[in-house]
Amino acid sequence: TGLSLSHFLYSHGELRELELDEVVGVAQVTRLREVGSGRYIYRQETAEQGEDSIFVVENGAVQLQIRTGSGRDFPIARLGPGQVFGGMPLVCDEPHAETALAEGDVRLLEIHRDVFRYLGRARPWLAHRLSATVVRVNARRLHHVLARLRQEL
Image (cartoon, rainbow, N blue to C red; front, side, top):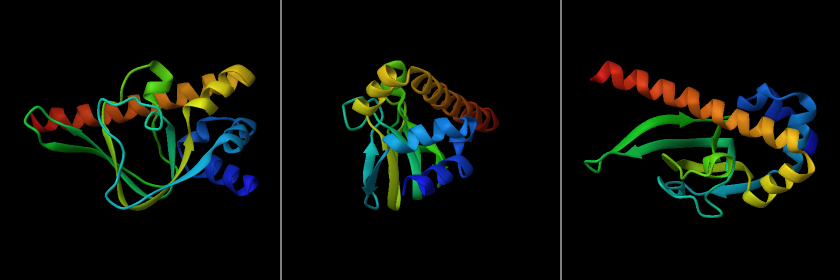
């Protein structure tokens, strides 16, 4: 239900940065997407419709990885329930910098392109706050990856 989804988003993840009424607004526009084990949610350098959504892991785990110049897949994060990923093509018109892969069967909450555009017209403050959260989450993730690289180099 919408109430339980709002509670999940507000108490279990990276959308806690939003106010409760904003989380309720996000819960109202998400749709459920199930992805089978080993399937790609999106690939690095893509931005096509259907792959450009903002996602929140509801159940299961998602691995984020980048493909290096030598063709090696380098894991950068393992995401669990409540964690946000994707959306950079919507927020800043850039393709994904990473690949997202389902580890086991995964249930995702998805905010797709049309819904994000609707939010931009109907609730611009919410679209802005959601965009800021996506950028902040990605910046934190990048900071973590760079710290790991500094240790390895």
